[in-house]
Amino acid sequence: MKEQITKQEFINWADNYLRKELTEEESVEFEQFCQNHPSYLSFFEEHKTFLSLFKDTEDRKQFLHYLSDAENKYFENVQNKKRKTPIIRLWDSFTKYKVNIAIAVLIALVSAISTLWLSGFYSAIKKSTSDYSALRRDMNTVKKNVNAQNIAINSINKDSKDDEDKHYGATGFLLSNEGYAITNFHVISGADSIWLYNHNNQMFQANVVHSDTAKDIAILHIDDKEFQKSKPVPYTFSSENTELGEDIYTIGYPKDEAVYGQGYLSSATGYEGDTISYQISIPVNPGNSGGPVLDGRGNIIGMISGKQTGLEGSAFAIKTKALVATLEDIPEEKTTGKIELNRHNTLLDLSKTERIKELQKYIYMVKVQ
Image 1: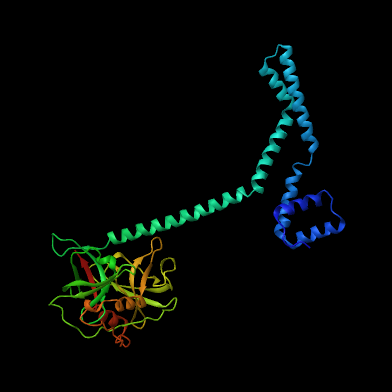
Image 2: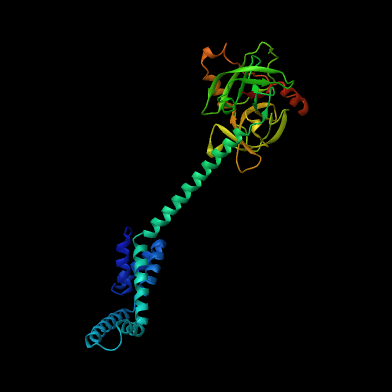
């Protein structure tokens, strides 16, 4: 029993079978092979259909005979200088043999198509078309997300410290009571000055201590005499992966006052499977960038980084694990000491509204100039 066979060998084998040139044993072997290999069976059926178009070889021979006869008569008529013009005589010949010509055209067309099919020409076209379509979809997706990011950044809420200077708002939150805060890198990129506004609308100037453009993270330090240390931040930072569907919420500044948003974790990875981010289903606007994402126990699980274009209510959040890794990368000379994250959650025993009131003390509006 044949197991490995090329397509051309199979065609030859099939032709011998159809012409009944195989012995009874060989015919049984061929039929058994087709039953065991459905793909070859399908190919055999197509091959039979193809051959049926050429079964009447006598018609082809007769057509060639008619064509040759018409040619001879045409030249004979030219030599005898009959009254009919060459065009009329040619039309007469065409009219007489138009059925045979139509058959010849059909046979030539089928032959050309079959040759291209057998050579894999259409498979190559199909694959090229498929690859082009996939590439075009990918390019459209990239273009769509780049445009969305530009729109989000350019549409960050505007505010004014005075009538002359323009500021663009986003969100940040404290890492410790030492004045260290965190926000997105794209929020402060290219800024000449950075200002943080607390829930009482007090304004503090801040400087960039460290940034990670790949993760879109910026670490800030409030360098302002007016800033006074508060008690330790009430939340903890959870590096454990949050479960899919878990209830989460955020507080941010898409406008000039704090806005609460609630939703759930919709994916354990971010855009195109990015493992340092979550996809979350929370209403998000440009001013929410840099805002904290908390679970139901008051643990920070991430930071808002952007919104997914075309999918209302869905956004991405950088995981706390990535935030903590960025803190560990800060050179020692950039800070007065290691940034110690709080390990004691004081939000657990508070009601929902009390938690929100307490959290607002540590979440800031970020404005850049």
